[in-house]
Image 1 (cartoon, one colour):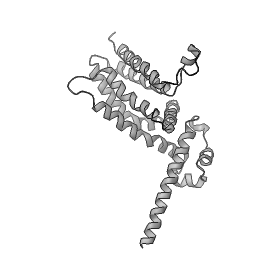
Image 2 (image 1 turned 90 degrees about the vertical axis):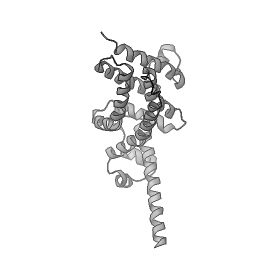
Image 3 (image 1 turned 180 degrees about the vertical axis):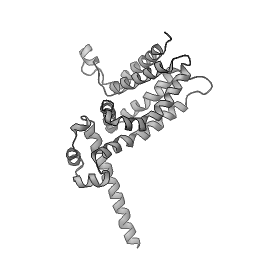
Image 4 (image 1 turned 90 degrees about the horizontal axis):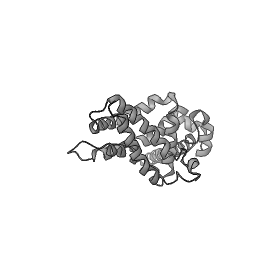
Length: 220
């Protein structure tokens, strides 16, 4: 019986390794192009597994995509909430503090040295343009976004909630574009590497977003 249990444990461990390899390969593949442009064949080739294994563990391409996006969302959410909860509790938060708690964790992950986070960031960018995944985006990210929206309302209590909601939506879009090193800055400056220093980009991004939220929320 002990030998049989050891075999079962070894199989389970091997299965987890295989699943992780498939997820990592899928994450890279889905970061290179929109969802429809990526085939399961491309993922299986990268992961060095057969199609049957992918179907065994994930059943479908859509389920695999969901697993890829979900895997890092939990970690990102936890860090965002941790930073927000660490803000001083004896006064209303500042707009910059709220936005930093929301954006900085993603920047830190991208700068962590793990290239998979950069892939993940690109996947989020593609997701934002595909209505099929609106439900998944809502499930994974809306609860946290609503917490930060409430914090922004605390920071700007006189603001119209609709204006604040638009402001936060603009911040999210700009954050994704900026941290993935996209934008027109290199062309405007004639410097191909102008977006490469993400710390320098973020040092401009945060005050720009804070000013934009304040202006969008200004009474008219």
